[in-house]
Image 1 (cartoon, chains in turn yellow, orange):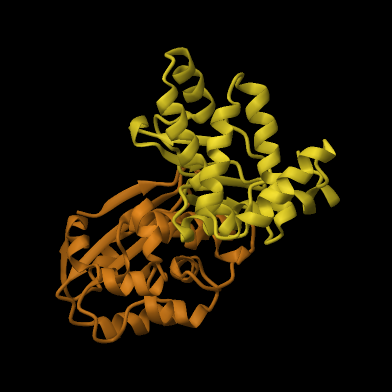
Image 2: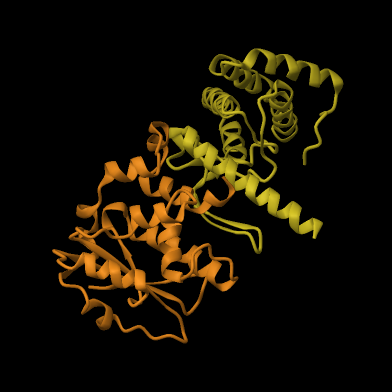
Length: 182
Length: 175
């Protein structure tokens, strides 16, 4: 029964976050049907999409550093807008961000909001970014410059970024995330 | 001219859509629908942007019907209720159901394996002209729809009106 309740809560949270994104003009799959019996969500299929993870890999292979930086800036902008809506993704990795076709347009689609929640706290936003940073740097070698560009655009786009970046620095020093995620 | 759509999640279940224009007896039809003597959901086509919107509503209604968790009393009432972005049942009927002086009516019928549909039976009750579903876009009142579903300007940039509508329909129970 507890399992059921937790499952249901996560499903509801995910559905809520997806709607929140849409209302704010942040690209995320459309929700077609939520089944609270099986706790499944039927979503729009972003056809012919590619994960940012795969795209970074192919850009790195072709040595296209300019595109990598532009992609980083787009990501920073996207995350800033998401956090400005007080939406914490909870599981940010480059495989949870898609590029819908045509890839060159850099239309980023956020997916997998199963661990998301609403919070205005810089701590939660900082940790959200930290999770992405850890995932980023471990999956994609030599991307420190790229992530720096991401954060720079994040800071420039988000109105509330000051305290968030400050917390991110503190979380890094602590060496581990304070919130339990994932 | 009637369009039939199977519901993927409910094999054997089909949704039939009938569109009528130049309808003269909307008042009588509405009365019959309220009494439960019409086997179908009578919907105001001005609020519908695409048949998919109906399918999403029907899918949810059939699902809730099967698990005994409908908010309204009949499957057809539930379809109308599912179209609404909020949880107020009478408001849903007022906005999405037909009104006495409507001249266009969209009728939705649901049938599954056990029940066979008599489309003629329902269609014959309408004093109007049955037209192709292709004419639906001409009957849609986009401004009214956007207002009803409270579509934000940012949303319009990232997806279709249909996407926004369907999202609200499917997530309204957790809001």
